[in-house]
Every structure is written in C-alpha cells, then in structure tokens.
Image (cartoon, rainbow, N blue to C red; front, top):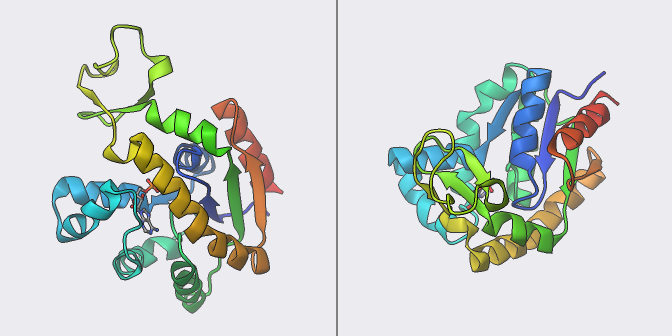
Length: 216
Ligand code: AMP
C-alpha cells in the first residue's frame, strides 16, 4: 500500500517544500509545513510569530517548546487522513514527542524521505532565490529576464531576498541542519527507515520519483 503518513527531510534549499507541496497535491495528502505556519504567524504578528521571528531571521531553529506547542495544535489534522510533514521534526526531542503523540492516536510515520543535494549547490540555489513580497511567488534569478530582476512576473509586486537566504545565513542554516538533523536521521534509521531520493535535476522528474518510491 502507498505510504500516507510521510515525513520529508532535507537541507534548506533541497526543494523539500516544493516537492512536499507537489506530491501532496497529486496524492491528495495534507501538506503540513512548520516553516509556512511560522512565516504566516510572523506576517500576522501573532504571539507565536513574535517569539519565532528573531530565530528565523538568524537562521536558527525555533526552540523545541514553541514547536511542540505548535504541533500539538495540529494533532487533529494528523488524525484526519494522509499527510506529508515538511520541516518537522527537526530535533531529537521533536521526533520523540511526535512519535509519542502519534502513538497515542494509534498512528505512526510510515515513510521518511531524505532529499539529497550537495551543500554548494544549495548555497547557489538559495542566494539566488527571490520571493514576491505581495503574492509570495518564488523565483530564481536565472528564471528572470535580465534588467527586470526586481518585479514579480505574476503580479508586478516587488521581489525580495528572504532574510534567511543571505549567504552567511544560508551557511549557518546548513550547519544547523547537519548538527541538529543527524540525530533525527539516526532515530528514523533505527525505527521507520530512511529512503533517499536525489534532489538535483528536473523538478517534475523528482516528484515522479518520490511518488514511485511512496507507492513502493
Ligand atoms: P523552513 O521553511 O522549513 O526552512 O523553515 C524556516 C525556518 O523556520 C527555520 O530556519 C527555523 O528557524 C524555523 N523552523 C521551521 N520548522 C522548525 C522546526 N521544526 N523546529 C525549529 N525551527 C523550525
């Protein structure tokens, strides 16, 4: 049977968010991204957003107690059908707590997908990423017409660099990823198992490969 309770993991800029969104759409799963939930909270100026903003801007992880509160709020969603978790859990305490919360509902993650991309490719990808300040569409400098690199092709809004996409912040995020995520991967290697998918190349081909792997 196809995996329906999936966690996607990979370095920042590996395309895990884009892939989680595409795969969720095609397989009718919920896409739960803690990064998206936090960015929404920041732009809405909620208490959670105010607590999280400084960590996010600095490329650091938001503390576990804040993240665990957020994921407890999403438990109803997790009970309700198939899903792909994107960006959570990112630390060992998060992974352990999530496993307990799921178990209390008779659930478990049935597949962990690791999207594999080399660090230097990631630095190049993220430092050339631009986001529309209005409609949030995401572009890469290489996709934009020369001389027209500051306006969104979709809505005309101003394109900006995400504060956490500056080079030194990207390098810090990669280091944080390696340090914090290694124990999370070990945890899943010992329990669910970890399936690697190459994350370089054509976006649609990577989506197709992920779906093939999920169908087993
Ligand atoms: P992402 O979009 O998944 O790269 O997340 C963007 C930022 O949100 C990260 O760099 C962290 O600051 C924060 N964040 C997202 N998910 C988590 C998490 N599970 N634990 C801690 N911080 C997180």
